[in-house]
Length: 204
Length: 242
Image (cartoon, rainbow over all chains, first blue to last red; front, side):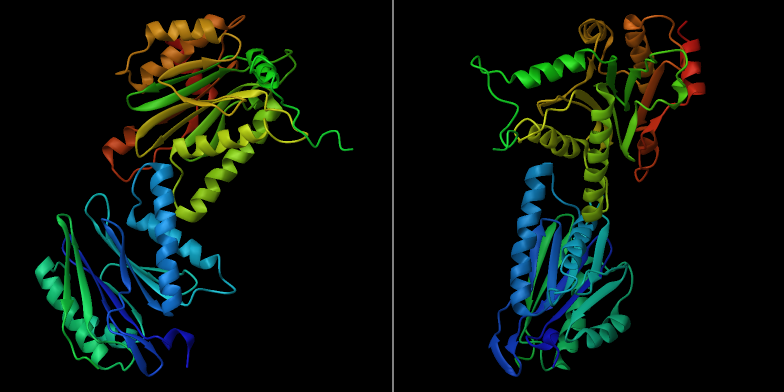
């Protein structure tokens, strides 16, 4: 079994009309054993950027801390908050620095640029950025998420419609993956603020 | 054993670092440089003094582009300037490697100043014999900074360094106003240099660099670029003065 599948995860981000959504499952496992049903894989970076990390849980936790440190240093040195695209490039750089002993994570970043424009991207474990203008997926349920998003997503969905779409994509994708699930968390980022909702799904 | 393992820059009883004072004297012997921050851009200019008429003045490079959005000029020792230009360019590209964008001017200035400070507190080295004027545009708009051999840096609206700095600054105090446009600022910079120049001012004897925010006003995504004016462009400006 691959090290990326040891803990299990499902992360997805979608672009809507002047909003973005990012969602993750909540399972933390050790192979077949489920250890935690409240393991959040997504964290706020700034008010306008959220990052979700799929993959090995220890690296997920460590990297969340490292990103927070770098973003805080950036904020204090530059006296401004970091933008989504800049942050993504920083993440890519940090991952490639470990090219020959990588962090076993696949990041998914969702945010709103200064001008209100939605931004999403994902990366592989060594920092290859994939910019998308529709959706990005990561984790053990990635293939399932691809299928669900491809069928359900359409452009210019408002915050509420986007929530429905991303929730359906997440819930149905993790139901077909033994390693992810046990509930989900969805964050919708709009210019007015972030709306966070918990999803109740199959608890298995 | 090793005579140079301790710092050559040591405190004098009156609290001053004499090496830095001497470095500033070296700056004071250098050609005058001027910088003016306009409402829509920044201009930096310097006198290109050729020691003899046999020197090919057109190939003298006093103005350096650090990265697309930042340029730099100096007063003092040319060779020290070259070393700092290389350091500044490396700082800018290292920042770009991580963040995929040019550093804000104040960030570049801080790092460059930090290098200059190191040379006042390290073994076997001497301070740099230059003061620098950095001009650039970032998310805060136009910026003009001076960096001294000590590593101190100052943001300026308009300033002058080098041989004629005192008279030039007095001249600028009278001429400068915050609403100046870039064109007027270039004009004023030339006039300021003219006050202190020995002999005739020609398009070969001064170097001017500008960066403007005009393109950004038209297209939010445009990237302002620092450029040295060509001798033909300088000639145009001079014809409006003389």
